[in-house]
Every structure is written in C-alpha cells, then in structure tokens.
Amino acid sequence: MKNLLIIGLGRLGVRHLQGMLNSGIAAHIYCIDIHKPSIEDAKEKASEVSHGSELIYSPELPEGKQIDLAIIATNSGERFDLSKKLLESNAVRHLILEKVVFTNPNEYSAFSKLLKTQNTACYVNHVRRLFPHYQKLKDQLQTTVPIHGSVSGSGWGLASNTLHFIDLFQFLTGSIAIEINTKGLKDFFPAKRKGYDEISGLLEVKFANNSTLFIYCGEADFNGISIHLSQNNQQFFINEGLSNIMKSSEVSEIETIRSFMVTETTAQITKELLNTDSCQLPKFHAIKDTHELFVSTLFNMYSNTTNTANEKLKIT
Image (tube, rainbow, N blue to C red):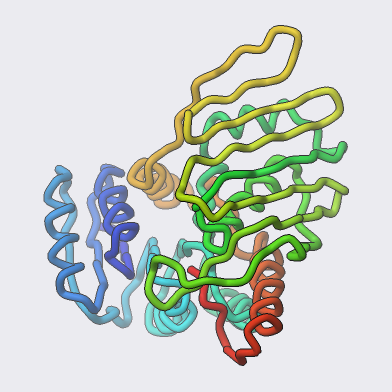
C-alpha cells in the first residue's frame, strides 16, 4: 500500500484526511498532531468514511519512510520548520502546502533549494483552479489582452485569503503578479485565531500583462464574496455566496455554480497524484515569487506601522 501523511489535524486537516479516505485508494496514512483532542476528533471524523486504509496516529513525525503524498495543514507560523523536518527525515514524493505558505520572506528561497535537493514535487492548495466554472471562464478569456477585476466583501480575512484570489487571477490571465499596492489598507488588528493578525481595506495588484485586480475586505461580519471581471466588451459577475455567475451580454443568463468541499478536492488530488504523478494545483516554484511578494509587502507594512521587529508575519 501507499504511504500518505497529514500534519495538523485541526478543522482543515481532518477534512484532508476524509478526502484521502474518500479517494478509494487504500494506504497507510500517518496522522500527526501534538494535541490529543485533535487526534481524538480526527479518529471520530475518519470513522464517518468507509475505507480500507490503515491510520497511524502520532504526535511525532515518522522517520525513514517513503511517503507518496504528504499534506501540511498546520498554522503558517509552524509550516516552514515542519516542512523542513519532514523532508530531511523522510523521502517525500509529493507535498501539498496550505497558504500562506511561509510567513518569513527569506524562507521561500531556502525551501526551494531544499525541494531540489530532496527531489520532492511540491504544490500549493489553491483549489479554485479545480472548479469547473473557473476553468470554463478561463476558456472564454484571452490571455493576450489585459483583464481587470475586483474581489469584494466583508469579514472574509484579507491577509489570510487574498493569495487564493491572486492565484485565481493568475490562472485566468496566464500572467503573474508583479506589484502589490497597500495604500488602501488599514492597520493590522488581532484575528479570531489567537496569536495572529488580520487586516481590512483595499489592495491593488498589478500583473505582468497589464491586468489589474482590486481586492476589498470590509470590517463588517462575513457577507459573501463577489468577483467582477472585465475584458474588452465582456463582463463576468461571480457571487460565490449565492453560487451563481452571470455574463453581461444582450441576453444575460444567470448560471448556478458549485464550489467543491475540501473533502472533494483532496480526494480528486490524491487520486491524480498517486495515479498520474500530476494534478491541477499550482506547483510551488510557479507561485513562489507571488507568495514571497505578498508576504514581503505586508511584512514591510507591518514593520512600518507597528514599529515591531518580527522575523515572521503573523498571518495564517
């Protein structure tokens, strides 16, 4: 059987575990978390899925194993050290990381070198690329012409989730982010997750092909996320909260869309990676510069506004 591994059995981690179990591929799955209640919760959630896998729960990383697929679903502040320790003590074939990948700008280059040394294929879990409605939308857009877009809503966690939308825009435009303007952002404030910060306001992102994306997050409670895209005479309106998309034309039809759950995307990705050695998630080396740009930009803003010298940005 294959050897799979998950580090971090919080709310996201247990959904990844259920996704692996739903893939239909029997495996030895190492489930790692230092908190006993998290392990007990993971056992309960795993029992909800019919599977033929062997689950090995432990607070410690295994050593000397051949790991076919590993997912690290810890908080961002721990991710670099745990990723480094995992790769140095085991042979990992495929690795999936959550965003924000790392919170110290210097960790990206260091980790890139480690991946090459260990011959590990690493992906970042930007799952909107897998959604059929965004894949269909990409086919209707021209990558040779700039696209202008906006993302807006309140209470959705700009610091934590902006990279998902930047990556979606990179997917749709076929271009990379080259500049992030933070002049419209407000001061950092304590996030709901203890020990981390959030931010609200307006962010402007410019891309290599002259596309632009404005990202706004208000301070009110979460009220859904709306996305608007325009290119030449085409306009698209996506409301993820209401699960619909509308194209502006002479005859406008509202189409229903469906965003996948973590259990669904992880099941799909697990099957793809174990059966074909590839998947639709972006590879680390392809989005490394974007994550590094985002983290560096907020890192500089945080240092300038708080007069605090930290090695890591406190976002997750």
